[in-house]
View 1 (cartoon, helix red, strand yellow):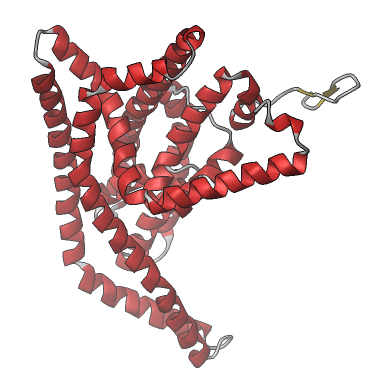
View 2 (view 1 turned 120 degrees about the vertical axis):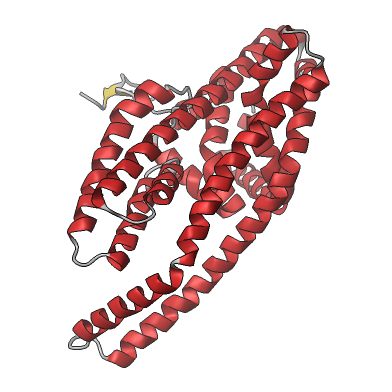
Length: 360
């Protein structure tokens, strides 16, 4: 960084931009390897306290890692099995739902026929179906990628936990000896932030899924458990997730129920749940050190989706949080750390004159 400052700004900007493009290209082409490795890294950090507890009980390293990994696999498999059973029940009702949706579309076309000719409406529907086909193909590709992730995830996790000491020693040794304490602090904060983020996120997701399911049960929306859990999963995505979580039960209610009062109550219920989540659950339960401002969160999620698809959307925020922790500890990178953070400065630094107050 100090060497780059000797060059004009346009040269530095070009080098940085070229480096970002090259990095994005490499990440996109190595997604089949890096996506399961990234999930395994987070899972290894989550399981590390359990492994340390088993080691403290004099359990040998390999059995300790195997027991912790087995507990994680059983938990994940149980959740996936429950969701799969709910999804199978949902798909068994698809023909009836499709007939109801076709009837609704026909009625809507008849109402719109006075303003939009039928041939024009059919053209719009055909274009919409053509646009959905790539989305279905991408979804199937995501499912296939998740199968490879499920195969590689336990292997990567086991090896990361087994070679933990080797990896940490490597990170200490590649830096100068006088920076060893700083490296140790960064690693501890990264581990603590990820554990805080993931543990808090799991508890928050459980509470949100419960509230979603109860609200849908009260409103009589079919498949309340499946829609409630899917809403909690989508809620992980900032801003977009909450909207998608509410749209799913509203679509199901539109197909399965007459009138629109149920959809209105779904919208009201999800707004209340979002208010509780944003003002109580996230500040007091998640209590994460991963505090990224709204602008960076949206950009990070969109970039993650462009590079790694759906997996990238979920991994974007934790990775940006790790970068912020690293940037905050490096003097040359601290402006970038402040840019990523959610603290709004009260004064603007103006070179050569007194600071100007921005927020009163």
